[in-house]
Image (tube, rainbow, N blue to C red; front, side, top):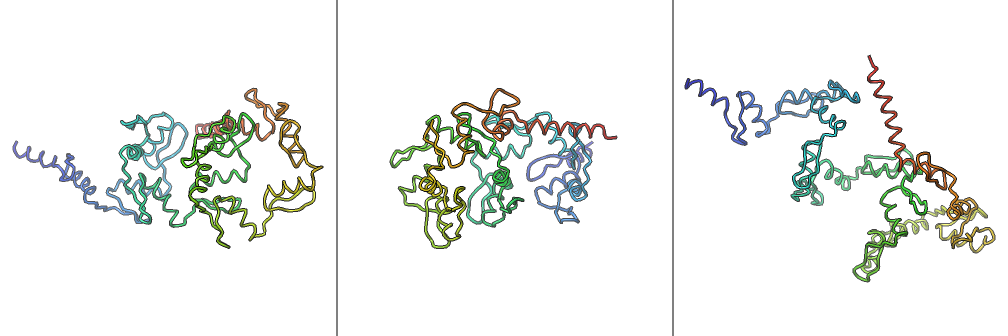
Length: 367
């Protein structure tokens, strides 16, 4: 009996590091690799090492492409059962890991741990180049390090311009597609970003929440306030690499650089003369083509093409010929109507859902 008790005590031996108990010495030894850092199992394909054979086996599926675990909701396949289980929370809405500080819930424990650092102030990952600290290794530090390495892994297939982050590429591509999904319900002006729309709407509401602590002047956005403050500080952060001249705004630098490059992107439709700035073009039209200008008799605006003038007139008479398919709203241009439907009625999401339904039917009908 004493001998059996000794055996049980031996099998339930505690680890020196954490006190966790095990029913067999083999399980104990495997666990101790966590504390010692010993990684006995290495991948022949890439050299990555693992604590257990099961972890190595799961990893090797990333090389073979083997995905044994399938989701019965959408047919998506995964390398391991644990990956499948995490994915299924997308369908069930389950978020089992919640923050006891603010109640925010997460589908993964590691996401909760990262979130908790917001409350604790812990920033365990620091940049060895500049010392800046971050709460996340992959999400924050690695992206930040691209500033130092110059790595820009996301490139535009239209113009070749490269970016450090995927969302910056996506936002840039709207320049090529002309996509401006956010439109002002007061005047119809459209924007590529919601933040741009919100700042613009302050023109209509009169809200100017950002004030200068030097002179009291107020602004609709923090960027405009910051630019204004350079008047007081004398800061001119943008300098020309050709002649060294400095500017308070990037737009001023870009305009100046056209002196060196000879670029004159704005041309007069009437006589073909080109200009470095839109302001210069408008001044030219007022002086030389005054008879060909289109002044609005309802407001002070002046237009330099009949198309722009006619479209503007519709804003006064309330003539919006493009009717939304989903509500009573009508808009001035077809593109505005399309973008309104996408933003207000999720037409892209509905289209994606239709495509997804077709995909699911194909999966379910597959023998």
